[in-house]
Length: 164
Ligand code: SF4
Ligand code: SF4
Image (cartoon, rainbow, N blue to C red; front, top):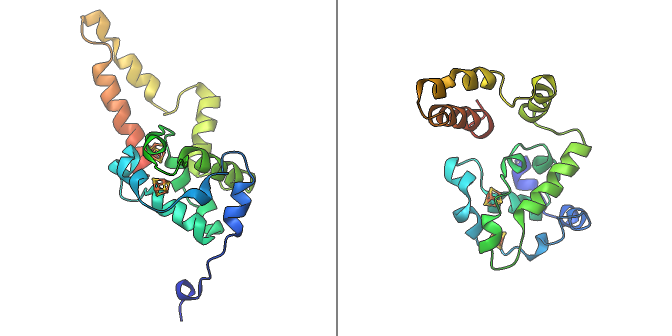
């Protein structure tokens, strides 16, 4: 018998999160999946499925959820919240999950590295200032933002969503 087959669901993690600010509404989730269908991040990558992540919490997979990078991918746009018929705020729940994960030392490297980088020179990506400088397009009477935004967006997607 594998570990997966021996897993016994329990509600301890739900109770723990319910007591934290932002985690109160988790037990209202009925696993309908509208959140995933509404989510722009889920639209970009198959690995991010908010309904599935809530399911793991409901099943009590505390360690798996707290050590996962997935709760950190929520952009807190709250589109799912607007559409959820049960009034669940996934953005708030995942914020509570991230706070708990951070308290236990589980911050994905990409985010802690970014904090270091911002503290070091004020930019999220090491060469973004260079990109911006390259955009001295105004002097050439070109659109100052178009090329830079496109390049920057691709880098953010690659780093934070694709995990490359
Ligand atoms: S959070 Fe809301 S929309 Fe998402 S699965 Fe649960 S009930 Fe459905
Ligand atoms: S708040 Fe998070 S989970 Fe909800 S739609 Fe936005 S990115 Fe997706």
